[in-house]
Length: 301
Length: 319
Image 1 (cartoon, each protein chain N blue to C red):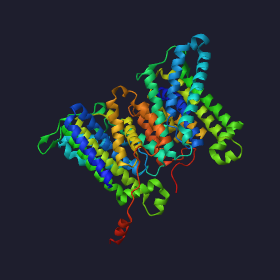
Image 2 (image 1 turned 120 degrees about the horizontal axis):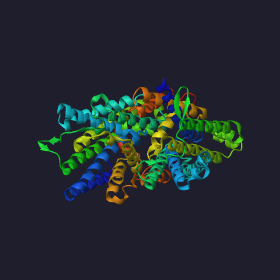
Image 3 (image 1 turned 120 degrees about the vertical axis):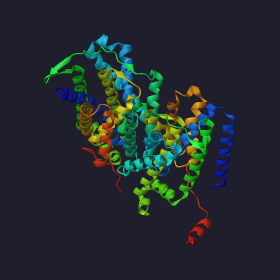
Image 4 (image 1 turned 60 degrees about the horizontal axis):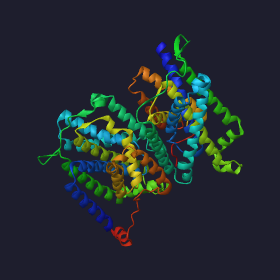
């Protein structure tokens, strides 16, 4: 029972991170019908920028742990969002009218490019986050000791998801995003500036991805320049699992995938941990390509 | 074949043969890996270029071929070149099996699924699946190939083996491209609905493209196993698939000369500029982005085969 609860809480924390990344995939897909392969690498940028800012500005020493991390998160999210907007401008906007698959190749190129810039700047080795940023205490809950950071990671991702959900559902701008996702032409006729909506999506998605990168850095303590692709694949699986293009779907899919993966690693085999999510990905696309709550993806004539 | 193209191939063949005579062992070995990648990229080109199916798990087929050859050779002492057809068959079978349920997926989804498939294969190899693959260390002690009693071990010997196979592949795939099969693939790449409407069984042709491409990659894998005498899962990582993908896209998808050029550029060029080696992927990523904006079709793009009117009349007159 204790092992089960440990795996479950760990799965929920990791799942929260997957869900944050998956939101970026799903929002871009919703509006542009494009899989943004470079999204995973924006996430890596979040982790590396977080590390650099943390060690160079000493935010947590100056502002205290809580405020310091909040300011850090805001800076990282802002910078990664900017990067996302640049990416959209440079790699995707010129291809808006070309065949969809050219945009996919461009996205792949962007992913390789971003990943290698990180490698050339920081080197290929693992980088370590400073260990003493957040208190290393554990909370006694449900009869087991859960590390505080694990609860914080889950809470932060849940708060961000809730905020995004309310933003998209309740505000005027959010309505514009949903309208552009349903029918760009009609949205344009209703006076919505679709280009602005796309830009906004490329600001919000990468900001959340960057925050996820920072969370991974804080949670695991070490980061690597290639981690974006494996996290990206997992998050994409989560987006597919929930139904791509669907914002609540990405959240549910992320948490679900995190839990499945953690339980699979705990009870089946840790060596096959990464394979489990790929199996789920393939299985979902074969059996139920719409995901749990999403639109149709299989080609229909 | 157009005369200019035939002359270009002949010139390339002569140039390569001359190069092998004068270059030292190191550069011959570089040419060997260019040849091996050309072989793999040509097999991927059948799937990605001719049929327009986004496959980014090609390294998995390559791995299945290489491991089949290695296992047959080390466990049953079958000469490595005799394992070539077995490797091709195993990879074809595997390709057909995994492609069958996912072949109907739309382009970018197929890409994701094939990435997942490639990773599952790699993880399975690392985890020593069925106790045959030797885990993360792989398989070693694969014997050298013997041709007519001549043991092949020098890079120069491999040069003739590999580039001979490339030449054969170019010839066969060129013929295939002009056949009913090749034209059907091009048709369904350009317009799937129209192809289906004209009676092309698109699902079957897509599957055939996958199976044939996988078979060829499998055979390339067995040559790789023979050349290296040791294989391990890390030789078949996701990045191998990415490199192959890049060769095809940059060179010109669907175009055989383009793919050959792509192999020289992507594999050969970084060897010439050694300082450039660490930034290699960075530059290729950038080139992929720029290329999609300014020259989507690749450096040497595919051109539709044009038939002379007299040929068509002749073909119609034939029974």
